[in-house]
Image (tube, rainbow, N blue to C red; front, side):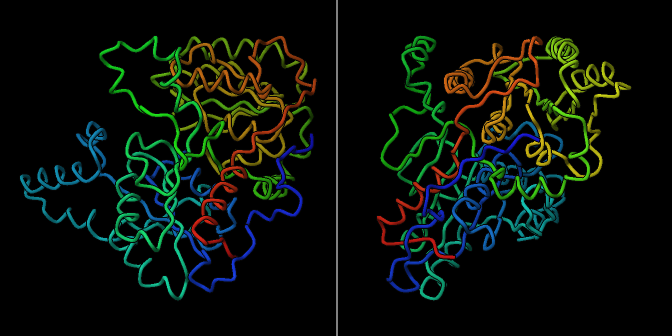
Length: 422
């Protein structure tokens, strides 16, 4: 196993500022994460809380939408309007009892592989802001971290209802009214629409409607990629957990992560065929190849790879059963091949400092093309051509987004006379 080249905090930096001698009311000892039910978004919030040092005192709340049937076509609506419409339709159907499902605060099971937490509560801005106000003198300010479009209204409402008792961080660009939050953390490529190249692609009469409309302000922190939970502590733990299974496999170990097409990175069976052919070409240089698919991977893509490599003694394909090996793969891999559609998977892999090869980057458009270019310019990724020798090692400065974002949170807190205290 090649060493995990993870970014470390600077000498003397514990991830926390010096504790202010201002009493309990200046020390932040707990955090609330507002989630939306999607691992990609929730992992970013939890990853930031881990980097800050409050993971052990984290409460996770979730914004829920009605699901199933016609609801799958209504996700473009604001959550509150979607729920009202759902309740109205249920009333028409005479199924009023189902309203309680979405009004009542109810604990829900969450996979330990997603967050390590045992339960989640329905996000209620009034309840959370009231709790922050009533416990302020005894427990200090409350750190609130949210990520994803559906969480914007809840997070901003908490800030509005308890401005003196909370510090609200919104991850991913909220598109408008950034002053509703104490801090906004978002990738640089979210500001791609403001670049001259992007402006050339937008008809003049649509430019005012494409967000963001303004350059990042003082309360905006820009990252290269997505925040995540794959920090040094998590990967060291995963290396230990997966030692018995992954330490003995022949090296080098090539991990292949396959996502799924998006509107800005379209692909199908054609890319799967290209990937299979290129993997066949590099097999001679691999000790082991382990392939994993995401929930977004179409069957027509996974079927091609399964058919091509089933029975090959060098290749293991995770079938989705049992423990998810993703963190173990990040810890033990010698190199990665990742489809270009997933900002999260690329961000995690590029935080290890190990070789990362990308397949399908030429299919990315708009800001996702800009993200691919930023990784290439940093030397963090290379195109997967099928001509590689996987035993060749190359390196680059690992992405350091988690620690840098945490440092910015600490600096912003210090301006208010607050600090993180564990």
